[in-house]
Length: 320
Image 1 (tube, helix red, strand yellow):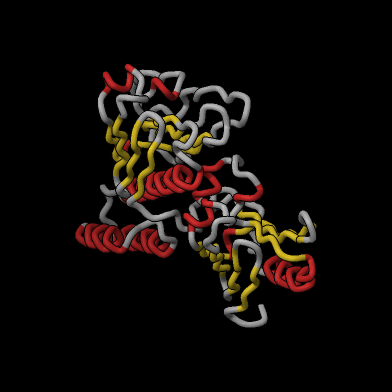
Image 2 (tube, rainbow, N blue to C red):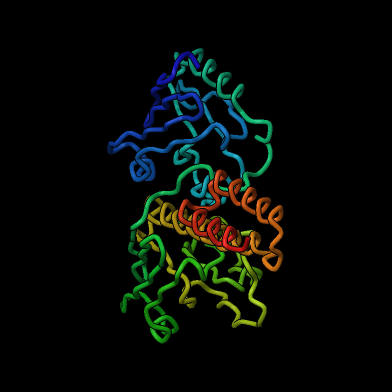
């Protein structure tokens, strides 16, 4: 880049280029897509990108498009290809007279793509929208406090099956993923996937778009049979359904992304101690040192929190 802090202003957003990332700031206004207004700004590390393109747009514009790596952004993962071009947070629309400048920045970004740019990311590299958050669906109100998802049913919209089940609370530790079908499609919904039901068939996609089923690839499968999920979201107490004016994209999609990120983070944290303690019966100092080194690598990679690292390191040292 020319220097840290360079800014490229487009329609609805500006991109600020840093040495290792791009800060995307979205404008606020009646013509700006509501999803952009909801997101406000996002910092995208260069390591989260797989490619960069510059193509002609509509009515005298060009489009700078940074494509994220699969698995790098929880918002994109939750959307699962259902976002329209106008709501894609990685597209910067510019007047055609800025094409030369846009091409310069496109080339600079391409030069900073990592060697694994074409590979799926092992963890989320772009931050998810922050909890707490909530939105109003057709049959209930969904809330997320960062640790638990809650559904509170409306008597005017909830099915008999949901009323019989009662209001629901789902700790993220008991979830393996999220399904989000855009409210702009036919019969949209947000549906949680409890652990142990990852392989249960979701509701078939119908005309108008398919659901995005996103689960944690490292989730622990439940060893015993469980009750199959209802085939329809309006009958499933682990789902809320959308409708005209209910569960809009700018509310329900960031919600789904935040839940998905929390699910992945909790599963990663839970898996680390089991891996570190796999050979806990041995007390060989060299083995303990190797396990502490491995724990340190996980900590540097962001897969273990500071508190988890300190506690587990102390536990390992106590085995000497």
